[in-house]
Every structure is written in C-alpha cells, then in structure tokens.
Image 1 (cartoon, one colour):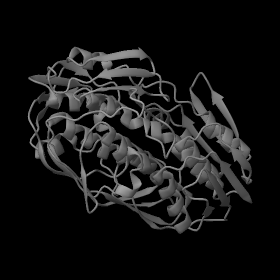
Image 2: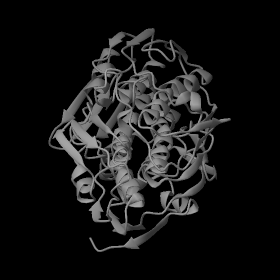
Image 3: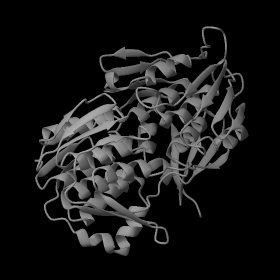
Amino acid sequence: MDAFEIIGGKPLKGEIVPQGAKNEALQILSAVLLTKEVMTISNVPDIVDVNRLIELLGDLGVDVKRIDASTYEFQAKDIRLDYFTTEEFKAKGGGLRGSIMIVGPLLARFGKAAIPKPGGDKIGRRRLDTHFLGLQKLGATFNYDSKESFFTVEGSPLKGSYILLDEASVTGTANILMAAVLAKGTTTIYNAACEPYIQQLCKMLNRMGAKISGIGSNLLTIEGVDSLGGTNHRMLPDMIEVGSFMGLAAMTGSEITIKDVQFQELGMIPNVFSKLGIQFELRGDDIYIPAQDSYTIESFIDGSILTISDSPWPGFTPDLLSIVMVTAIQAKGNVLIHQKMFESRLFFVDKLIDMGAQIILCDPHRATVIGLNKQNVLRGIEMTSPDIRAGVSLLIAALSAEGKSVIHNINQIERGYQHIEERLKNLGADIRRVERSS
C-alpha cells in the first residue's frame, strides 16, 4: 500500500487551481440516469470516488466517453437493470458512499432500484433514513436485507407529495429531488439542503426540462414532468479544497494564490478562516494569501473563547472542521471546535498531539486547541489517514512539521483530492510517494 513521505518545515509558494467539486460531482453524475439523451459534464475531478462512480455508471449500461482530462459525455440509453443482482454490483456499490445517489434517478425513470449499504469514511454513523423516508412519501416501497446489507426500492408511478425532511441532508435532498422531477404532480421538500451543489443540481435539472422553484432556499417545489432531455454542465470548484489550501498557507507560512474559486459560492468559509487570523485578498476571482509569520485567533465580543462549529448551509461545512482544527495549532490564541454531525471525525487528534500539538479532546464532538503561535514546531511522525478530511489535515500538519513524516493509507486522501502530490510539489513541497508493506 502506498504512503506519502514528507519533509516538512519548508514555506511554499505559487498558484494552485482547485479541482471540480467532489460532492457536486456525485449528484450530477448520478443525474445522467434520468435521461436517455446525451449529457456533457465538465470540470469533473479526477479522484477515486468520482472515478468509481463513473465506472459503476458504465457497468449499469451508460455509454461513457471521456472528451478530455475533465470532460465526459454520458448517455444512459440502455440501462442493465439486471446488474443489480450481480455480486460485482454489490462489491462495487458497497465500496462507494456516493453510490446511494443512483437510487433516486433509477427509481424515477425505471420504477425500481437497488443498492448495497454504501461504504466510505469511518467518521461515525451516516444513516440513510432521510433518503428512503422521502422516497416512501413519493409512493415507493423499500426493503432492507440486513443479512446481505442490501436495499431494494420499487415504485411506479411516483406521485408528488409534501415532504418535511427530518434533517437537511444534502445527499437526501438530492436523491429525493431527482426522484420527484419525474413524479406525477407537485412535490414540496421542506427543510431541504440549499448548498451551492444542490443549487447546481436544480439548475441543471431545469435546463434538462424539470420544473423546480425555490432554488437556494430550504423549500423546494417540483412540478413533475414526463421526461427530461440532455444538457451541458460545469462543476463548481471544490470549496473544501479552497479551505484546505487556505489552512495549508497559514500553517506553512506560505504565499499561495488559489485560482478561480467562485468566491460568491464559498459562503462562510473565508470568514471562518479570517477569524483564525488568516489574511487574504480577493484578486478578481482568485484568493491571494500572503506569507504570515503569525496569525491570531479572534475571540467573541465579550472576550470568551471562539467556538467554530458546523451547521447546515449557509452555516459552516463539517468537511472543513478537521482543517480548521489543524490550522489553529500554530495560531496565537485558543479555539473550541464543535463537530456536531459525526461522532468519530475528531478521533485523529492523537496523531496531532504526538506531533506536539496542544489539543484537548473534550468528548467525541468537541476539541479545544491551544495555539502554539509558531513558538514550537511540530515534529514529523509516522501515521495513518483514517478518512479523507483527516488525511489532508495530517498532510498539512506534516508539511509544517520539522523532519520527516510518513502518512499511510493515502488512498483515503486520494478519494477526495486530485493529484495532490503533484500539485503540492508544484508549490515547492518535499513530498514523494513510496510503496510500503501492508
């Protein structure tokens, strides 16, 4: 299994372009199943999770053509519904969290779908109740075989309904939305997620002939249509990468320009990193971060310790809390990180403490970081990446540390970050891939 060897402590410099958005890609690519017409999707990230989904679509019978490095044509003209019954499907679908996104489109167009219980990051419980409860409201029935860990869903025709989601789930909203566009009548989804990626999906579906209103709010109204056509779509840049690179610049004292960030779609992300003391300038649609010898965490107006927590959009994304925690290690001041959504996402702090960080893990959801103010340099260690975001956080820590670090299980990082080794080298990072025995 490959690992990264990093010699840290070197400031970086240069420009970096964020990849296409991973979380948008999983929804958009699944939506190609809604039509038999040609769909052209660009700015597709070249990462493990997305490539696995594209491979799964091909196995289902979708005609996939790669036009260039980040552009694909898809045509879901002849779908192999019998593929659901194969052991190959169970193995491939079960290894990919994003595979759940094919259920809504297949159910809407063909009246049935199936999926093994999806895998993905080991960051805590990631229930699917919101997806299936919403599909039930549209008239579908589902069965879960606990022995096989396999879901089957049927329903034809689907009928529009009022749906109040029990949580503002991004993937749940997307799945129900994709089912509802071909349902008979009107569907309203209240407490819908309204992230830019959901907005992108809605806009694309409308270009395909869907009738969705309320885009950008938590109340979506969908008038069902009989069929959808093809269209072109371009992914947004990945906001998680943008935040990751902001944290990287601060931790390593680097001068970095993040190109073409679609700043208006970043929501709270720039504000949160600004609260950590990170200086930046918006130059056109690029974020320029100067090299900083130190950065100071703000406190609340009454002087109490800053708390950074995740919440549904337009709140701060949970995917960046690991990055925020690592960035705070070398800040001046203290911060409480409150990860509300996943109870295992902060469990990698032991590795940061081994590197010399001052972090108190209060409970599975909260950690207090006592900033070192760059008075004490982290030390390189050998460690293992437990999930995508923790893996990149450890990578950022290693790049700021003194000496050599080794990160194992880098497949987790590469599930979400495209050609990360090459792009970091272009900034001057001393990083190389090595083969390690399991």
